[in-house]
Image 1 (tube, rainbow, N blue to C red):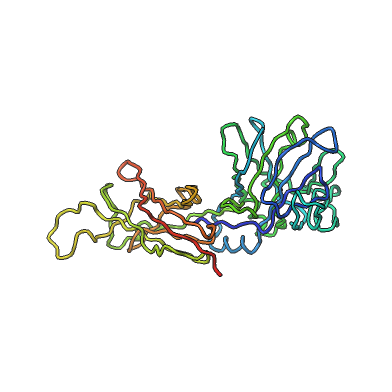
Image 2 (cartoon, one colour):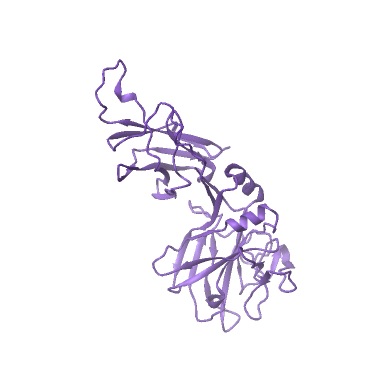
Length: 367
């Protein structure tokens, strides 16, 4: 039972038409293709993004080895993209610096990486030849640069888009993260590109933008880890599971205000709405029960009504102990200064039920 998000340590876009331009502080990451100002073909943009080794190690220490890691970027704008196309994601071979430039800076900023260079002030050009095995670079004809990357098995990741699909990026990159943590390859982040059949084809012109780490929205890129704890559904003490949906469900341990450094155990209490009559001295309405083993939680951003953590039959499955059903939530995976809502979903007696009784809380940034 675990969902944990970490956010980029650096990200940027590199542009073939502007080989020395740095765009490290832009709020938008760009995979667009536009008319070229320099060649008869078209200009292309690629995304570079990196996550800190210590952050990754910290998550894996929490989750153990049975985790999945997904690279997620959220679409900001799309126009004119092909009906069906793929993007490619690979681990980057050489190190790079994000810089502090923006696309529209005048004069052009070059204090970080660009299409031609990986360091500030137009130093340390990207290697374009003489690589070890399973490493390559690709660029538009006559426009060397564009970063370099690993291509061996397990390091080539793809996502297919079509007319009806979501335009967010969500790709399983577990094998790449595992290679970083085992020091098989160095963590220099990911490169995100259009496939060569589109990237090098002058007939394609489109806009495909994503929010960057510098966005002022709730949609920065993230590396999302999910794992399933070993839940002992027999560790119930004297409690029993509910038998039908005639129950009242409440969320406990919700102090309504949390800091992003907290790791919180939310308890879920389920009580019979119509308890069986019994001759006892205590109230029948205080007898707690457990939600079924097929019960899950989700977290929703209240203002945008966006599911920040969706129901997941593995990672967001409720645990149990002799006190109640419960789940654990890492607050630093949520954007601070926002209000959130908890939803609980249970499969009871052949039906699926959502419990959403104003379970709200706010996350504040630790000072």
